Length: 250
Image (cartoon, rainbow, N blue to C red; front, side, top):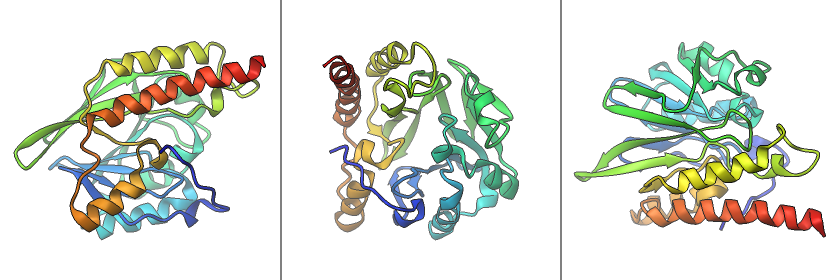
């Protein structure tokens, strides 16, 4: 679990789009997770990904029966280019409003200029969907995580994403900002207090998106619906930071 493949080019990691649960769909690639939420009154898209994979995202949206013109909001979980590289082009294409955490807005300007800055406790409402945001700094200073509800087979599920789980910026000489490690651990502890039935990954290796998607398409078994996935991944994130510190001290 939590294994990352290597590709020479981002677009080589193509994944067929699929419905995860309710109104939540995966439309990304291996190196750049992208999700959409069909709110009934337009689409909310999460992290367009690399500019080099935007064509795959658009193709996947069409394959699922939607259109880019239906996208009303683009949420960017943090400023890094593997999440925001395609934001400006996609927003220009569909006319969507762009969002990012307030403490990442300035750095994100190298890729796009956000119209909405998110702070702790903010919410976005569209159609039947209400998305609630938390500031979860560490990976970047302005990383945001979020939660919302979706319904399938008359059951309500709470969906959640940790918006910046990567440990690469927590290593010495790679810090996004001073104090990032302490913030990251605090963010993980805060997120552990959230109930999440369906964990969607900021990257596919966070929650075995590709593997579970294949199982879902072939057998209809939905391994995404498992509240242990959220807790297990967050505990993994915490232990990984401790391992980094131990390795640096040896």
